[in-house]
Image 1 (spheres, rainbow, N blue to C red):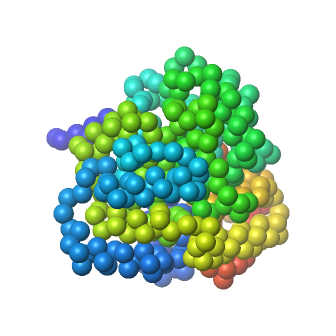
Image 2 (cartoon, rainbow, N blue to C red):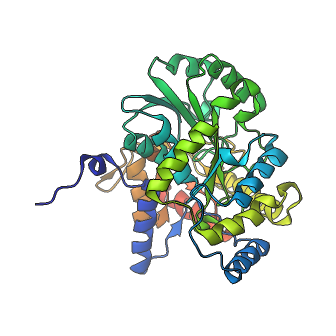
Length: 400
């Protein structure tokens, strides 16, 4: 009998994708499920980006592309990083991948050896944990709760570092909490990292443009740690291009070359048409983009709507997200409550209850490293959010 590898046995299914699959199955059975489980903007890709893709097809950009991406795209990304983030990179420090998830995987496989420790502030994006598993590293959680806006302190970071620490990975704006580290907070973390030049800092900035408090700041902005930082970004969230599958990283030449080497053996260069579309995306200045402004304004309105709906439901504790499109309420007030024979023991039970009885798809905080919470995506219409809030209030009110 054929047996699968131990590696695949250790790997968990993405909880967000699993919940989306369950939602689809219920919809196919005739139920109207409101899916608030997936992180996907409900906007269309801007027309000028689609036009660039159509032009690329007409001009026959249909052959294999360079592993790290077309030189024109890598130059455009360097221009974007200087224009938007005041970061200086050269094209040979950029690797374009099939989504930011592949960029993250390339990086972790390039820097982490079996047994190395990777520090991860919790809550964290679900795939960080599994990517670290693939590299046979050890994930070390640094826990932060709603009372600290889900952000870690420099003291916590200092205490977590050991002789085995090889990397640190985080996102700001954060998935799943929407939290955004301030300049002072990032600088305080940078001061700690500056004492440990052997630690790679993986900065996941995919939600850069969905920021309600002003211009995004990268931790790579602090010169004392610039060489330690690997910036990860892409076009999926800020330009509503999830299906185009294009992300990138900016790093030292050594790490960029390592990522190119891994990618060359896994996928080679990403989609040639997506790359040409991405040039149009990253060359557009978000500070003067009507499409980006409209999207961010819409998400902020939805955030405020969801916060008002959450405030009307007893027992939920929330922070005020400053970016992304998620709310991550503490729901421990409902643990131990029952309805009929059903007992809510944890966030997974609560999410399953809300899916089965209220037909709302959410994701348990256990998937993100915080079992006290659940993740709610508000990347959908106001009407759907209002209906979801009403269903949630009714269903939670039936728990005793």
